[in-house]
Length: 314
Image (cartoon, rainbow, N blue to C red; front, side):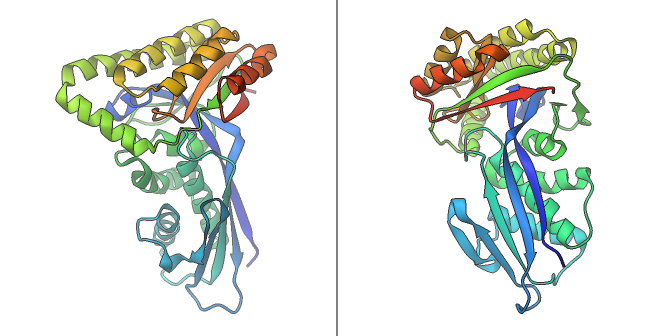
């Protein structure tokens, strides 16, 4: 068997994080400048069923049986083999690498899962359709998020802008006018599951207040979709600013995020907000193409640990 590789992009949420868990719409886009990659190679001489996992970024080099049953990499492999009906696979080595920052709102967990599912299925000679890959990745996402909305695995699997409502068919978005986003990483690592659980706890204590917040975020996401499809870039920026205000009221922002958001706006960004779980991780800024580097430099000066410039809709 030849070696098989697969890769999957990162993602950012333009509108609707957290509210999407409660049935409100969200808009997300892939970030192709960063990606996860999985390579499956045959392991001749090893017994049938032997699987060696190498993931240098998280310091793993061990047989898969030594990983916890609920480890995301082990879960991705086991669910894929189960879907294929393979109990005793030929021996192989799986190497996983990623340039996507961890716990930063860029969909690293989903991208790793999708790349593994694609590579393992391909190595077995039975590639899976995107719909099935998405379903398996959603099950893996439960490890990272507890109660995932499904948006991360969806936008990563299909690698295109999506309008997503939990429990409804996926809608792929056509971007009328390309636009540029600068992503700034606070360097603060906060697992998404923690922020999701905290929002759920706050919602249970004060449902009326949080339903108001979720409704507002959902309306912004719907308006954002219209702006994307009509090429109304200035409105897109205004909606990002509005979404950030509601996310602050939701309690998922942080001083580090707000410092970067302020720096981006001061440098000329059309709009800026946190993206993902919040409490750290990444913020995003909508910029005119010629201003992208200046905004990225301003973010670095304000304390961003890293920046990414991505073009959407090319």
